[in-house]
Image 1: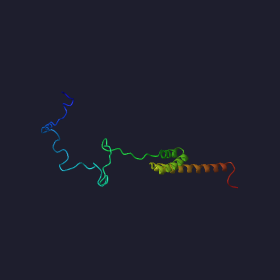
Image 2: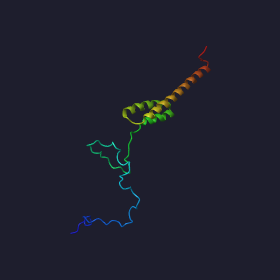
Image 3: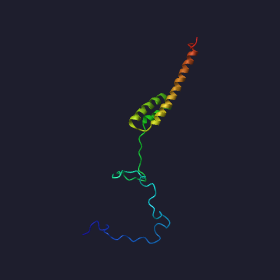
Image 4: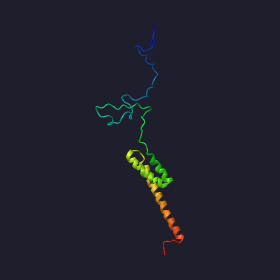
Length: 147
Protein backbone atom coordinates (compact mmCIF):
# COMPACT_ATOMS: atom_id res chain seq x y z
CA UNK A 1 0.00 0.00 0.00
CA UNK A 2 1.41 3.36 -1.03
CA UNK A 3 0.92 6.56 0.99
CA UNK A 4 1.63 10.19 0.24
CA UNK A 5 4.28 10.43 2.96
CA UNK A 6 6.80 8.03 1.47
CA UNK A 7 9.40 10.71 0.84
CA UNK A 8 9.21 12.31 4.30
CA UNK A 9 12.22 12.28 6.58
CA UNK A 10 12.27 9.07 8.64
CA UNK A 11 15.48 9.39 10.59
CA UNK A 12 17.91 9.00 7.71
CA UNK A 13 21.45 10.13 8.50
CA UNK A 14 22.22 13.76 7.67
CA UNK A 15 24.01 14.51 4.41
CA UNK A 16 27.81 14.48 4.52
CA UNK A 17 29.59 17.78 5.22
CA UNK A 18 30.75 19.81 2.23
CA UNK A 19 34.26 19.12 1.00
CA UNK A 20 37.07 21.41 2.18
CA UNK A 21 37.23 24.68 0.33
CA UNK A 22 33.50 25.31 0.47
CA UNK A 23 31.73 27.55 2.99
CA UNK A 24 33.12 30.55 4.84
CA UNK A 25 36.70 31.40 3.87
CA UNK A 26 39.18 31.44 6.73
CA UNK A 27 39.56 34.79 8.46
CA UNK A 28 35.89 35.69 8.13
CA UNK A 29 33.20 35.50 10.77
CA UNK A 30 33.35 36.32 14.47
CA UNK A 31 36.52 35.46 16.36
CA UNK A 32 36.20 32.41 18.60
CA UNK A 33 34.85 33.09 22.06
CA UNK A 34 32.80 36.15 21.09
CA UNK A 35 29.02 36.34 21.42
CA UNK A 36 26.54 38.23 19.27
CA UNK A 37 27.34 41.87 18.51
CA UNK A 38 26.05 44.54 20.91
CA UNK A 39 22.62 45.95 20.28
CA UNK A 40 20.80 42.63 20.36
CA UNK A 41 18.31 42.36 23.18
CA UNK A 42 17.42 44.86 25.89
CA UNK A 43 20.13 46.83 27.71
CA UNK A 44 21.18 45.54 31.12
CA UNK A 45 18.67 46.37 33.81
CA UNK A 46 15.72 46.49 31.42
CA UNK A 47 13.16 43.82 30.80
CA UNK A 48 10.57 42.08 32.92
CA UNK A 49 11.12 41.89 36.68
CA UNK A 50 12.50 38.61 37.99
CA UNK A 51 9.86 35.93 38.13
CA UNK A 52 7.72 37.43 35.35
CA UNK A 53 7.64 36.05 31.81
CA UNK A 54 8.80 38.31 28.95
CA UNK A 55 6.05 40.20 27.11
CA UNK A 56 4.47 38.41 24.18
CA UNK A 57 5.48 40.74 21.36
CA UNK A 58 5.36 39.62 17.74
CA UNK A 59 8.78 39.22 16.13
CA UNK A 60 10.02 42.30 14.27
CA UNK A 61 9.67 42.20 10.51
CA UNK A 62 13.01 43.62 9.40
CA UNK A 63 15.19 44.43 12.36
CA UNK A 64 13.17 46.59 14.69
CA UNK A 65 9.55 46.59 15.74
CA UNK A 66 7.60 49.70 14.70
CA UNK A 67 7.30 52.40 17.32
CA UNK A 68 4.03 54.26 17.43
CA UNK A 69 3.95 57.69 19.06
CA UNK A 70 1.07 59.69 20.34
CA UNK A 71 -1.00 61.46 17.69
CA UNK A 72 -0.62 65.21 17.20
CA UNK A 73 -3.64 67.32 18.01
CA UNK A 74 -5.16 68.52 14.74
CA UNK A 75 -6.37 71.77 16.24
CA UNK A 76 -2.79 72.59 17.32
CA UNK A 77 -1.63 72.26 13.70
CA UNK A 78 -4.52 74.42 12.54
CA UNK A 79 -3.70 77.01 15.23
CA UNK A 80 -0.20 77.52 13.84
CA UNK A 81 -1.40 77.64 10.24
CA UNK A 82 -4.26 80.02 11.00
CA UNK A 83 -1.93 82.29 13.02
CA UNK A 84 -0.33 83.26 9.69
CA UNK A 85 -3.55 83.25 7.64
CA UNK A 86 -6.03 84.86 10.04
CA UNK A 87 -4.29 85.68 13.32
CA UNK A 88 -7.30 85.94 15.70
CA UNK A 89 -8.46 82.47 14.63
CA UNK A 90 -4.96 81.10 15.30
CA UNK A 91 -4.99 82.65 18.76
CA UNK A 92 -8.38 81.13 19.63
CA UNK A 93 -7.58 77.72 18.12
CA UNK A 94 -4.31 77.61 20.05
CA UNK A 95 -6.06 78.24 23.36
CA UNK A 96 -8.66 75.55 22.64
CA UNK A 97 -5.98 73.09 21.45
CA UNK A 98 -3.93 73.48 24.65
CA UNK A 99 -7.01 72.69 26.74
CA UNK A 100 -7.67 69.58 24.63
CA UNK A 101 -4.04 68.48 24.87
CA UNK A 102 -4.12 68.72 28.65
CA UNK A 103 -7.20 66.47 28.71
CA UNK A 104 -6.20 63.90 26.06
CA UNK A 105 -2.40 63.77 26.44
CA UNK A 106 -1.79 64.20 22.70
CA UNK A 107 1.31 65.76 21.18
CA UNK A 108 1.30 69.26 19.72
CA UNK A 109 1.54 71.46 22.79
CA UNK A 110 4.41 73.41 21.23
CA UNK A 111 2.45 73.93 18.02
CA UNK A 112 -0.51 75.26 19.96
CA UNK A 113 1.72 77.55 21.99
CA UNK A 114 3.37 78.85 18.82
CA UNK A 115 -0.10 79.50 17.37
CA UNK A 116 -1.04 81.46 20.48
CA UNK A 117 2.16 83.53 20.45
CA UNK A 118 2.21 84.28 16.72
CA UNK A 119 -1.54 84.86 16.59
CA UNK A 120 -1.40 87.15 19.63
CA UNK A 121 1.50 89.22 18.31
CA UNK A 122 0.00 89.64 14.85
CA UNK A 123 -3.42 90.45 16.32
CA UNK A 124 -1.87 93.04 18.68
CA UNK A 125 0.00 94.65 15.78
CA UNK A 126 -3.21 94.74 13.72
CA UNK A 127 -5.18 96.31 16.59
CA UNK A 128 -2.40 98.87 17.17
CA UNK A 129 -2.41 99.94 13.51
CA UNK A 130 -6.20 100.01 13.49
CA UNK A 131 -6.25 102.39 16.48
CA UNK A 132 -3.57 104.58 14.84
CA UNK A 133 -5.59 104.60 11.59
CA UNK A 134 -8.78 105.68 13.43
CA UNK A 135 -6.87 108.42 15.30
CA UNK A 136 -5.30 109.69 12.05
CA UNK A 137 -8.67 109.65 10.28
CA UNK A 138 -10.28 111.56 13.14
CA UNK A 139 -7.47 114.12 13.15
CA UNK A 140 -7.68 114.64 9.39
CA UNK A 141 -11.47 115.10 9.30
CA UNK A 142 -11.54 117.79 11.94
CA UNK A 143 -12.73 115.76 14.89
CA UNK A 144 -9.25 115.96 16.37
CA UNK A 145 -8.20 115.35 19.93
CA UNK A 146 -7.05 118.90 20.69
CA UNK A 147 -8.74 122.32 21.08
